[in-house]
Image 1 (cartoon, rainbow, N blue to C red):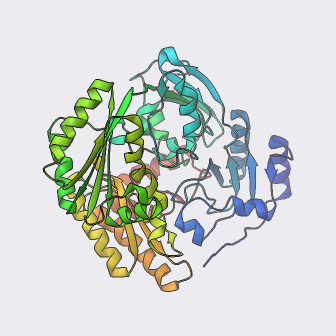
Image 2 (tube, rainbow, N blue to C red):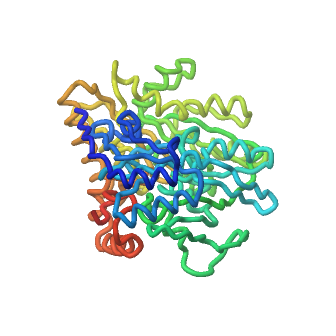
Length: 478
């Protein structure tokens, strides 16, 4: 099942030059270290790990620049890596080469609260940044489920989002500028070399070209981020629906009423069952097809008003409802959604939750139809699957659960993953809305983008003619 292949060692001259840049302590060559760098959180790399030939740990922009110059000169593949929490193989070295670990570049360089921005290195963990911002009454809004582990640099590389994207948008909305090492080793600053402005329309928007490029066009070494005030309080409405279609109608009714929740999350009946198994005291209703969790935020009076309005809108669609604007009670109601990602694995004794086909996004109007069809696909392949996600913007996560020792299930779950990605395109959606393309979704890129893929490939060839940065990803030139 595990198809690890050990690449040949790099020439000793290359190793010597890397040692001059990084020293002995931050140059890794032994087999155990290489295995550590062969994975991310994706199912694909659990099956087929990809080993680098050498790994180096950077501490500065200058070191990154020197390493890139060396790789470009000798045409050696170079793979930037943060915390490797990604689920698409985006940070694994599919062609051997040099693994460039940026996780130790993790300093918060400046919190400029008067100008509502912060300057950080790419290895800063998302939650660590927000903890540091709390005392200023500020936050960096994107909130992926892996916020306790993922780096902000990785979020920028994949244009990540999270539960509250329906109101606050995605990572790209909060990047004011960045320092980037280009494939030549040259260093540029986007968004204005010395700017502290919160917006600019001067010149090409190079920052947004880099955001979501998954390390294929440049390596981010510094970020200037826009911040927002922390909301004073939050309110939660949790409700259950007899049919998936009722949940979809409730979401449309909420938007039509003029309400703007900060989050709208859905859990199907399998997820509800799994959450109850993990935390029985939540006692979620098990006889319905879907649960929705709405969150609103703002000033205390505003939240109370929104909770009451929201409750009145959805109560005509639901046969079960709980709501609160009290912080402790809100946290209890929100726990159901927070637990679901970990709980799904309980659906099958000894089961392994597969991260595959789990990040599609479809138009909101087609969400109930898509949810139903995913269950049909899972049933066709005999796979237990829970579905949850950010129904407010059509983004959903599927959680197939399999026995890793069952060859038939392992074959079938990979077919299921293909069918789910193809379903997303059929439903006029996308194969990824948060986690990126990497190697897992590369084969769908031409179908999803058509002739626009040739423009992407042309940009890649122009900036990286030797194809050294993260090659083998996103269906770009190999």
